[in-house]
Length: 423
Image (spheres, rainbow, N blue to C red):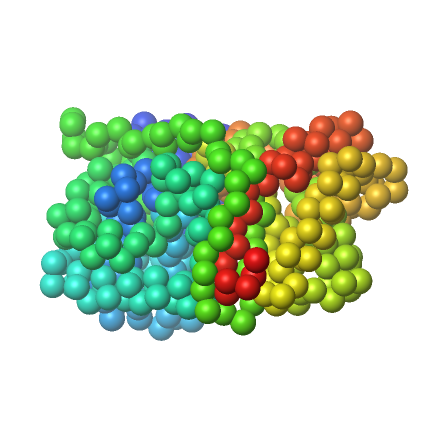
């Protein structure tokens, strides 16, 4: 066991079997957040098995060797806590928020879910229908569906472009054996990150995990090495795709590939996205909504993954004004690419980003997510002060370089979803 102090209240332990444990003590609260990240998810799936990671995330809640589905639901909720899970592109996460006195119970329940689900074929049909209804919900929510279509437009042949939920066809074809095979290949300590934050001690967390068997050596040949994400091919840039849908609005996403999570240029992208479309004071909000009155919702966004990142813009507008809104957004892209950020505008943008970073870590759950992100995305640990200093040190030239590369209008792939008259 190798334990290091990463920061004043943050510790990290790497066990010989590969599991990584991080914790942050927050003595001022009476709660604890703890989670287990399995470093296998939708980005590792072949197209015919699209959605298997997400379906497995659902299925572990249907029962374990020791608990029924109802007992799982009651285990933490009966004490006022919460239990949840999500599937992303790079990891599948299971996490709990409890009173600090219930940390032992939370570790027990999470371990039971992750390590000992029964994955019965009899439960699969019911849960498959739940996931199919989740897919229906996305299709009934065009401002969600347009994002799936945009990712697919960027990477039509790579799992980063696949739907995390899968399709009706792929989910309908998944079997209990598919779930058990994925569980055996991915849900083992060496492929896991465990993170916690709140009123807890790192040494106590390690004791609880040891009691649950997280540090035991794996039997020889028991689990193959976790699969790596296939390097994504060059993204499709400057394309346009239109999808007809009977909606009151036309939903438009501008999207391009950017840099991975561990790339320091992400901080310049965050600063630029804030200025571009990060709030009511942003250029897109002021131009598209306040000056032109073309939309209720318009914003810029960024996401960063282990192998790549994305940045883009969403707008929802009337079909008759969609072309005007798209043209106005392109004009703002061109202006940002040409001018970058200078002087007082850059100083204000950096201050805004620093404030958001600080405010985002006010809860133990947020601190837990941040700790897990470092090993999940292959990024060396940085303290909040180091991150704030990195943002503060961004220069006009660095910002201009990132703006010119990633905000160029001709680089953006644009996806439209709405009535035919959205043209």
